[in-house]
Image: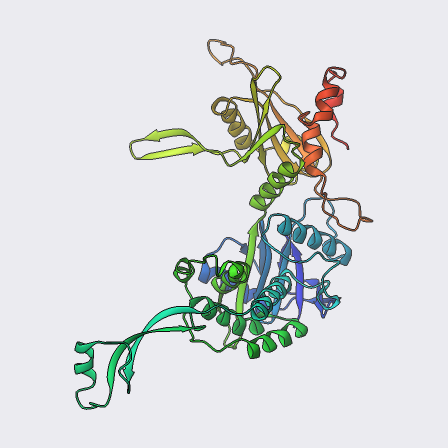
Length: 459
């Protein structure tokens, strides 16, 4: 069963020569039309914005992750540089590593690091990592002991044990007088949590390409107690109510929810299933930057994420402003200064003219409604920072609108190819240093006031 790695905003068509992977080994092959047709049907039936059908193919967008359709595992990777070497195995491995590390830092993927992963799992898809983590969690639950829960059951019994339900007893047992229709309490392992996990375990072999993991799934199925079959929907997970006794189930249930709610019967007539586990790269980039800034904070700053304030209202309709990140700095005199960051996962290709007008208007509004000293748009790319200023005169009466600026930070989220991990783990410190919000930069501010020191963002 093959797997295929593509990049966001890449267009693939039936008949294209692409890099397919079989058991971790890559070789070029032709993309068959049946996979494009299956993806078209997935788009039509689910109406999801994960990709856009094009003439004879598919164009991907900002959603990254993994899609399983027919017997093909399709992995969509981020890409924020100017290289178009889509078929190079090294380039695909680099961006897969960056995505997995981002997901791990943002706690969307809780797995061991690549160096700790078993050899059989290296170079495989993100879906395999989720399955591996789920198997580990359920095995841990089996070794520590599965919990039991009380539940009420009712039915016919030959012994009067429990509460006799008279109305149902006379209705169902008018002929069979040796039976009693009773309601009683059972204390066993056949409850909702285990039913969800059991459903996920039975599902895994149908969506997994890795034979090593498939064999572990079947082994897990043998060791797990047989419980009642249930129909999965989103409301079931709202009824779980994990308490202190079941808190260690949280990770396993979270992965089971991710898999089961994104699963559906295959669009073909086969017995397989399709699944899509995808993430909006804009939101992932925002969460990653927020967490790295929090990690780099030396305690002198307050860093807020997604603070909202009212912007427009009419009767029962209203709109609000919600910047991605706000950094609060308290000065020696007790005054507070606010810096607003708005993250954008977009490649500017080194041209500031590619900054969107809507983004600039948004930053102008942040200045006024959040009392911001400075506002910055944060993009991935080559390292540098540049300041820009809004015009401060009104059009007709030439009023002074005040000095408002909007800078652009282009921060490199990845490191050199020779590094063990491609993801730049120092990005939080570098951003704070560029904004002169870290301790070292504040000490140097009195000495270095020239603008040139603020134009280059190279650490």
